[in-house]
Length: 299
Image 1 (cartoon, helix red, strand yellow):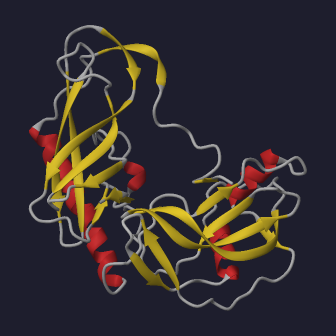
Image 2 (tube, one colour):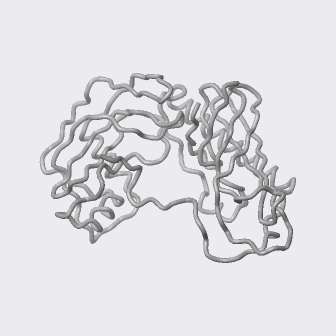
Image 3 (tube, one colour):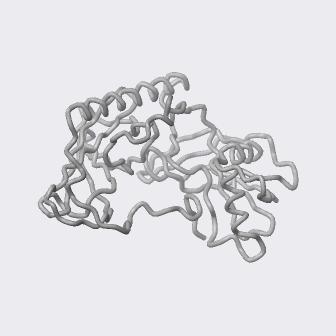
């Protein structure tokens, strides 16, 4: 049985139809770099405030999806198109009342063998969470009927890499697939970016997708989508990075140095990496982006 972080995800790599000149990506200016550092410091300030409000650094920070699709497809007895959109809209009804009592504490296990005891929420609370995290309203959709729930574990992405996490697995009427909802109780939340709707169009460089922490504790190798070739090639680019740090988090800014030879280039994306040396050991801190959203770091 396969578990997916979402259903029908769009790939971030691939060929974009078209041809472009390689002179469009100019080196970052000192003013742009200063603005990026300002944005990074603002993100760190927001993250530090969230940590303080929650009473200290959280044991578990989820990265990405809170709900996993379990199975190969929805099955032949359900309208798959409606089911997917209803899920994204948070449209669920329970055929019978779900348990409201929280189970005993569970455990999170990371790939390096680290374990952490955590409080677990009730099945009813998990269902409520699935409803409230829906992002796309669909007034014409038929809600998905939840017919049962069982406590299990599933692999979710966290700020410390993939982890086996307590989850409520919901069965759905007429569906062969199930939905796993993270069941960890946490009060940690970073507020939305003020004026985020006004920040479109700002130059932010390649976005960090994930990272690996070095055994020395002071180096991070970040991964992102960039040019397939290095900067000595006609359509290639080289990348450098620097870090802005606080006691609780780190922001890594990636700069692109593109070859400016006037040649025609297809817009092909490939996974590239850059290494940055921190001022002190990464430790238990969290890697975040300029929007103060956590990024998964494998140690």
